[in-house]
Image 1: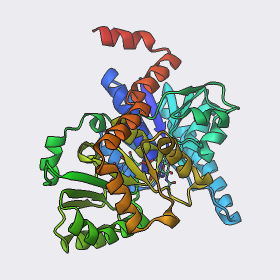
Image 2: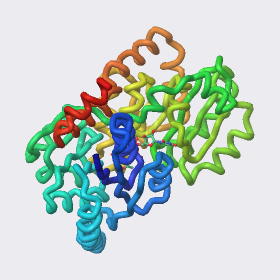
Image 3: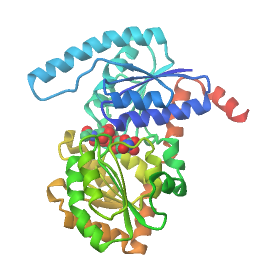
Length: 374
Ligand SMILES: CC(=O)N[C@H]1[C@@H](OP(=O)(O)OP(=O)(O)OC[C@H]2O[C@@H](n3ccc(=O)[nH]c3=O)[C@H](O)[C@@H]2O)O[C@H](CO)[C@@H](O)[C@@H]1O
């Protein structure tokens, strides 16, 4: 079995692909998998670390200015030529588009070569690339029912969930306590701004530290700052007595989730898929400049279900964050209910759902059943 996963530009798209790829390898040990992705070094590293091959595709983001639009169209055309040769040489059974501008050229190349293709969509409001590509592919696999109305031109749309990495679902708290050098008895707040970090969240949370230190000595922090906020955050925690693990990027996010009693984060689709699968109560601060304000709509799915709170970036203050943390953590009954409601909306078996559908589409159902039976 040969598969190309195409997409990236942000970690959320890529992580969904890596999770589906993991599931394929666990069923078909001989499978050959290649990721076609952007020029971001972090993405290449994440893919190669998992043992998959990585090929860079020429692609530029769509923009608002004429110059950006021309650059995007020009590099997509060049990317299609690159992809036509690369896809034909590899000759995959299927091309899986993960969303994001990087996925456009390889999926179009697959279509031109008559190779089956599908899309994964993680957000409630699909991104431009997936909306555009949906009319060409065989099937679309999305996370939310609310996405269906955006794919009226697609042949088949299925609600499968967003694939989640196996180590995220299986991490154990005690192993993580050791890894981070934190305490097993304290409650843990996890702060993450998604794959690139969020300066606004970092800055506001660091302003909470003096209050946290004086009022809540039973709390500890895991803070994934992103590349830019790391040094400042590290220095800020050093000046307090709060136990904290600070990193710019964490490969083993499962370890952080296994310790987190509460998460303060953006509302990227893949993070939401992960925290709902695990049932972690959340305070969500959607990225206000995201296309179509889609992070707000991702956040609303979780919040309207009762699994957390939404704070708009303009309204975020250290006091508000402290108030919400106390509100969630100080009432056990409410806390347990939030956990339960979040977990109930999670789709932990999404990787399996997606791979079942891919296998069916390329006619591998019997091989899969034989492997399971054997
Ligand atoms: C600014 C922007 O446009 N962001 C988009 C981007 O989010 P972005 O990629 O930033 O965020 P997501 O929440 O979707 O995904 C982040 C992924 O990175 C992982 N992670 C994060 C930090 C870390 O230190 N280690 C780590 O492994 C998370 O566990 C998760 O798997 O793609 C998402 C999926 O289409 C969209 O919903 C977001 O709106």
